[in-house]
Amino acid sequence: MNSLEIRTGGEQRLTAPKESARVRERELLRVAGQLTGADAAAAAQAARLEVLKWAAQQVGDQLPEAATEGRSFEHLRGGRTCIAAGFTDDHRALWALRVDRPDASVAQRTWTTEVVVGHAPGGASALFSLRLLASSPETTLQVEPAVPGLVRQIATTCGLLQSGSRLDANPWIIQSEDAAHELVAALLSPGRTVPYLVCSVAERETQPGINSQMLAKVTLGIARVVVVPAAHTWVLTQQLGKPLSVFNGAVRAYMPGFSYDANPYAHRLFFIDPQPNEERTKSTLTALRWLAANESIRRLHLGADVLTFSAVREASLDVERERLKQTGSADTEQLRAAQAQIDALKDDLRRSVETQQWLSDEHTSIEEHAQSLEQQLRGAQFRIQQLLDQIKARGDEPDAGIQLPESWDAFADWCDEVLGGRVALSGRARRETKSAGFNDPQTAARCLLWLANEYRDSRINGASGGLRKPVDEGIHNERCGADRFDFDWGTRKVSVEWHLKNGGNTRDPRRCLRIYYFWDEESQMVVIATMPAHIRTGAT
Image (tube, rainbow, N blue to C red; front, side):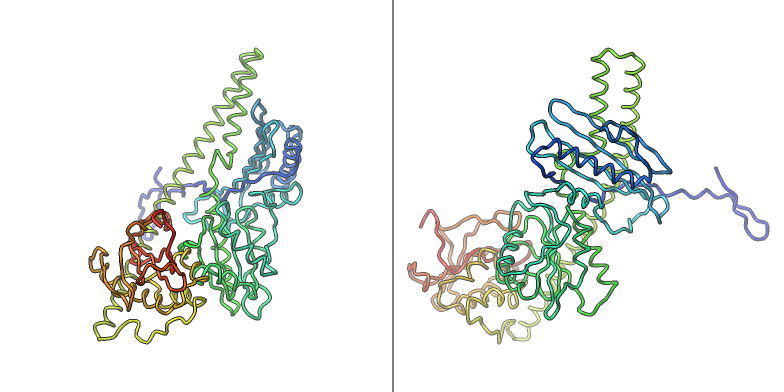
């Protein structure tokens, strides 16, 4: 219906009423784990009672008797709802609960927590999963994601495991060199499922620049917070290299899938201002919380790692309807059960539509952001090349006056500082230079300078890479021949077909130099796959 707008001078104009903003439901985070205890049924029962205690506090009322008996129920009080559904069949026993409560400070914003506890008859352990969702008309949800306190309650009272490790709401504090090496092994573990938020402590400080204790509590189950004092950050730098390390008070988020060859930009580094800045510190904490929350949604799959309340409710209604049919219950009872299932399906459909719209909006936003970052990267690459060309146009050499590394211990850092953006050491090559047997690191460094300049320039200008020629005294660029091999780089498998080598067929590691490399078109860089020794292949 139109509305009247009163204007000065008695003039009236018909205007359409303002459309109220559409309320959308967004999923914020997911948690999944195994309950401790040899008796899965008893562990599930204990967890269910803890969930009900928490739910009663959320709705501010005593729950019906059906709740403690493990039966389905629905409880509404003052805009807050608590619904539970459960069933047991030959394959599983599942119980789910959903609590909806309004936000205390933002109108039309509603928080939804879904919890599922279950076990299989004779199963090794009971499972626990949780989802946190928010419904709001806000275009951008102005919140700081936090794992509900229920997870900490379950972890403390019942015990909760992830990948065999017990969840702890306190940060892991590295107190020895051995513990630092243990951290590196954990970061590189292919079975790791949550981000590690590693907070380094600056020199002459005793605590990290952010509240690591609070961060550990609000990310319990979706991340692990680690504190590394300044005395032990050198272990990360030595093992991972400066581009992938964290030190001097900074914080790095090491995502699952991290490796020696990881792209540093995929594992965000946050610099903490040594001068206390409350606003900037809060911004960093918020970014870390969102990063962990988003990763939990990406990693944990619905229907496999985490069950939805609607899936358990629909299954329980199916079981109940089949029971009524088998026992010959009256038509009215069966009709009532069917209507309950229809109502539940309508509610689930509404929520699914809202979720699909949210996912579509998020996909569009992320795609636009990715395109923007890609354009910025291309612009940066163009600018780097432009500056290099300007230096050469003046008759100078980009690396004139560069001091070559005098030892292999300094070699990787020298590459990062001098050749950054032109030549990259793979994780394998970085490790190999730490224990290299070749007795002349400066010759190897001159080879990399040739790759960074003459070879890279030729590739950028359209050459195919077939520069079979002398590089330095006694050093040649040659095809690997029978020694070619495939190499994993990021998410791709590339073929390594060229290497720099010194003369002779010696296999003495002190005198034999081999630098195996490939051209990465995407980053416009030369990547060193392995060096400085001859590799073992089927041909050798």
